[in-house]
Image (cartoon, rainbow, N blue to C red):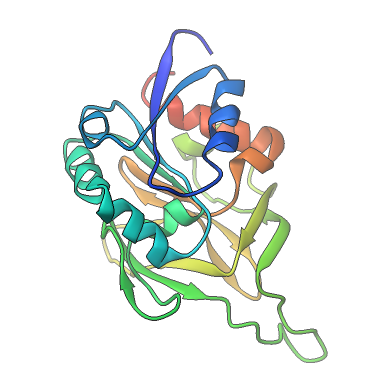
Length: 218
């Protein structure tokens, strides 16, 4: 990468911030980690990472006023990338341990893998979905530049995002298959989310992080 690129990573009391920060820094991106709402509002690019329960994540955002700050920043066109739980928080609601509202930046719900059998004679799905899986994408996407369809990424999750159907917008950018296809990457315009862990996905994950940091600047 050439030139200085900076992203603002949102700290709402979740985990895995340092590992994601190190992954960005590995591709030459400066990272500011903050829970300051003013910094979030004036950020040039935002990253919402996280692992854990949906409700706890939303509670962490609301307790710090970060939910409103994120929505305000995104409304001005600031690019936002949600990672793992951060992707799920972008959606309208989650059914994890009840029904809980999310940020509402992407339409749809977060659902649990059923753990049902894949087919006759096949074993039941293990939940969580954990390990390497292929991500498939049909069209050229700036976030996936240099990442061939069929590349492997590393997943750890029990819930998946189900974007709402729309006649005008296809919110699914890439899919993976685990007892059926689900959204591995979803988004629209400058709002994007990835379900897998880029910091654990080796060169594929690093390229996606680099692509996000450089959107519109290549």
